[in-house]
Length: 551
Image (cartoon, rainbow, N blue to C red):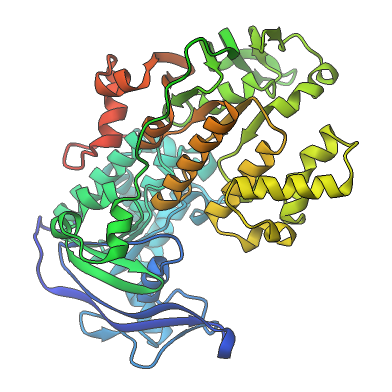
């Protein structure tokens, strides 16, 4: 076991006073943080809350002096102390003793934080060898203790695994093990659960809370998820445009917010319900007993020895003006199901009927004219938009392929209309993806799909990477487009709040099979299956004080 007592709030460990951070010089300098001040005490959880670009992560990185100096500069009077030791401008030797030893950090995306070329054994033991001066045998024993502590099941089998061989939840647990290896006084968690399924999120949050109580750590939690804040934090500091605009006890801030921006954040959760589907609405797409089994091949001759049953006997239909929500954990087959309906997965077997026509029997050439009516919006717009093309060129790609006969003037008019429809200025057509925020990029991805006037759209986690206020805007935009064009949506998401705001019907997947499906409100109100109940409990009532399941 790690040393430490269960403890409440005690001495002040971190003091931040009048912190300012600027990037660049002169008139072009960007003020990322402006006059931020707060304290963090032993055993306390302080949540820094705000939208992307508010300065949360820059503030956290400043504590450990991990900003890209000298490009980043602290203003005169900026002070960050750890137990009275000034960190701003401290010598590298001083910072080396504090980083990882006394103050540790968990980053948002473990896949980019863990070295893909090193095993879990090497990466966790490296912390112990460098900071604790342990021998290899002692470090190996300690690595196993740490992996058990963070809930990795059968850690002996995971020691020689590489990061890509672990699930998202397991990778995050490894990051926590590395952060806790030196028993720090302060743990900074930067969006530690953003990319995780709701059940894994609840487990990771429960783990952090349990370890905090056990070790008496101070926890600085950086997040835009207000549900996590409500359940985890003792105090909240709300940031926008580099400034803390409100701070206070969590319950007080949530129940009696003083600042307009705080009230805006609290009101940002996707609300409302979709409009009812018209009686007698035509069926757009349906499938019965759809299967996608990927072969597992081994040996010199690569013989098929088994199959991964990604989708295993799913039946569904989507009507005009209807949204069918597909929920489940990572690996449940959600995205594979959506791509199979669009005939983008060669391994898919089973009838797929689009507008009364079997499309699973069509060749690629025969299917091409129908592609304009079957569109998809991907999870990560930055990854799905070409960085080399302007926004106008990206949106026009579909027109170039499916309507090559239209002239340049009409194409420009259609691009402008598509941008207006997603509430973007047509003048932005000459800009590139990197010049836009995450929410704007997602609107561009939606415009690219809508310009072809589709009948059916697969929305694959379209809001998971967005701030809550931007999520609410995208949900309202999608509902508006559905009302206007009578669209059918397959809405894939692990965020059940967004699904509740969007879906008429819900289908719950686990290991490729349908666990439960039915009318959305009925399913949310009274789920019948234990798996669905667990998903809803994790998403809508995050439990953090119960024993943490092993990964």
